[in-house]
Structures are given as C-alpha cells and as structure tokens.
Image (cartoon, rainbow, N blue to C red; front, side):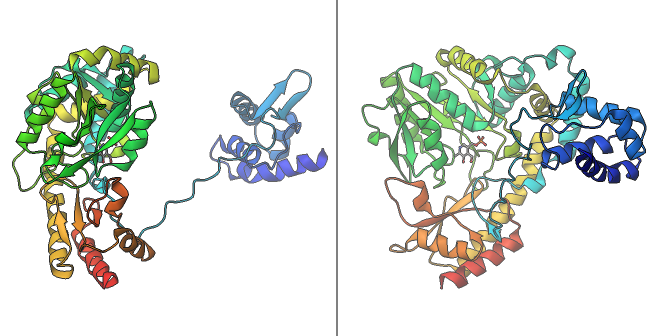
Length: 459
Ligand SMILES: Cc1ncc(COP(=O)(O)O)c(C=O)c1O
C-alpha cells in the first residue's frame, strides 16, 4: 500500500507543484488511471492525506476525486474511502490510436474539395449568429426532416442554381449524400424493391451502401451520352444516376437519354435517384438543369456540401416526390432522430447572406486554374494519355493507351508515393484503362510537378 501511495505521489507531484491550473491534479490522476499506472481496485489515500502529501489545498483533491468518480474512473464508498474503479475489468487504457493514413507525397484521389479554402471566418460568424438567434426550444430534439429555415433557404438556392422544383416540405436534411442514399434504399426496400440500377463505372463505396438494406446493385453501362437506358433490366425499378457529371467519367446525361430515363421510370412506377454531387463546379459549359425539374414525381434529388464546403460537415439533403416523403422522414426519425440544428442553422445563414455563393465563385476560379494546370502538363508530358470529362467537377479521368494495365500503373505510382487510383477499381463491367485524378485539393505548381514525375515513372 505504502509503495502504491509513493507511486501515486510521484505521479501527481509534478502536476501539483506546477501550480497555476486548478485541474492539473485531476488531469494527472485521470491519465495515470487511463494508462494503467494505478491498478484497478487500488485504494487511494483520504483527500486530507493526499492534499498534505502533495502540498495542495484539500479542496483540490476532493474536487478531483468527485469529478473522476462522476466520470467512472474512481469509486467512492462510505466507510471504505475512494478506490480506482475495477468495474472496467482491468486497466483503463486509452483507445488504440488509429494508424495514420499512408503519407502520400501526392494524393490525387477524387472527391475532395480544397479543404484549405474552407470559409472558416464566415462559418464562425454564421455559427455565432445562429447561436445568438436560435430560441432555446431549437436546442431540444429537432424536426427529423431538418431545420425549416435551412430547408427554405436551400430549396430557394437549388431552384435558382439547379432549377430544382420544390418547397421546404419536400426536403429532408441528411448526414451527407451517403445517408440520403442509404435512407432512400431502405425506403425502396419497404416498397418491394429488391434490385437497383447503378452506373458502371461508378462510385465503389456506393455499392456497399446500397447492399446494406438488402438491395442488389445491378451495374448498367455508361457511354458518351451517359447511362445506357436500354440496358436497364426488367427486375429493376429504381436507378441512381449522376446526370450532371457522371462519376467518374464526367459525361453529362444527354437530353434524349434524360427523357428516355424518365419515361422508363413512369412506365414501371419507378424512381430515378439523381445524385447531384458536384454540379456547382463547371467551367466550359452552361449549367444543365437538374433532372428533378423535368419530373419531380419520379426523381429523388440528392446533394451535399461535401464537394463545395467540406465533407466533415456531414450535411446533405434529399428532395423527394410526395409519395416518398412521409416514409423517409419516419426512417430518419427511427435512425437518429434528425440532424443537429446548429450546423444547419449556420449553413442557412451562409446561404442567406450570400457567403455560399461568394465561396463557390472563389473556389470555381481556383479549381479552373488547377484543372488547366493539370491538363496543360498532361498535354506536354503525357500526350498519349487522353483526359476525359474535363468540363466540370473536381476530377478528370486520364485514359491510358489500350493494352496498358491501369492497376499496374497505379501501383507503380503508389510505390513512388503518388496516389492515383485506377479506373478499373470503379467498374465491374470493364472499361478502358485509366486513372481517376482529383485536382481540386492540389495547387497548380504541385500538379505540374506530379505530372512531370508520373511521365518519368511511366517511361
Ligand atoms: C458520386 C458521389 N456521390 C455522393 C457522394 C457523397 O458524399 P457525401 O456523403 O460526403 O455527401 C460522393 C462522395 O465522394 C460521390 O463521389
């Protein structure tokens, strides 16, 4: 016991003598328990004794004991004093640290905007204003469909920039496009759907998400005009499309195909899920209206801030046909009782004050410069590699000469610290060899450097 108490004193003394911060003893004691330096069940000295040993006020030790008892690190029993908790069944260790992601010298994976461009000051201002203005009731359990003021701002914004035809009642706020898609597929399952069409090539992560509620993803080929509608098989009544900018090939679904797809959906009481994941980023072509505008009863439209602001916000939305709305809202209620109103309120203010439009204007200019730097470097150093889908978005596909194995090229680049995913990883039906390269998160100078290096490695 004495030895243990000596150890305890040695562990806590530096914190006690450092002075200044009243919580230092509490924090040192918590760390010692977490790290297993104090055995579970160990009886601690009385607060009076420990205070005397450490030369601190008794109140400092009682406060520390009280707090750590409340947190479950200590147990206090009348008559037997305070002990290190044993209920956790062994030393309370810190969570195993997650190994750091591979430190790529150049990370050209697609899907990330320039995180360094996140409008931090505007977001702080919008959050402050939201916290100041939101009534206390807004801090209770939220509306599972989402904060009404955000739904109103967003439907107005989407009407303006994407011609989406909706009112706030048609919208459900989600944790990103991923949750939107996941909820949609769960609702379709309850409507008797067992399979769902997906573009091929397409987003590999999407497949697991669709499978989880029990739907079978059926790959549908994509050509230069977008998804091949005539290839949709009989058993499929719903399909996910990236109509504005096909992921990853970057083609736009052409008008004839759009009409054909909607006619297909109408003919079988079906649904088109329009994943409008990066439509704000467009450089050399006029905006294409969202398909949702062509038939709001047959299209569920989804979007998020992941490609415009930051994926970490986990903020997305669904615009639903009336026949899907109630089931989707109750799904959201069942899953997590709704998204947090605070980021929603901040985003609503960013939209209302024009900060979102300003941010998009700024980043569009930066992304165009990055894309141009990438394309001109490719033209100079890799003239036989053909860029595809360059007019919009945050990534391009570089088509490799036929016969080249893109996974071998990608692996060789990875060996040199360059993350450049192979197109073959995005397809089950097979397509030409290529690399899917995101450029938005890399500066023009670094893009020029990496293309030069890729050319040298490829040679
Ligand atoms: C094609 C596509 N759809 C949807 C998403 C959805 O992302 P989030 O859940 O972050 O909105 C992504 C993200 O990479 C994507 O690439």
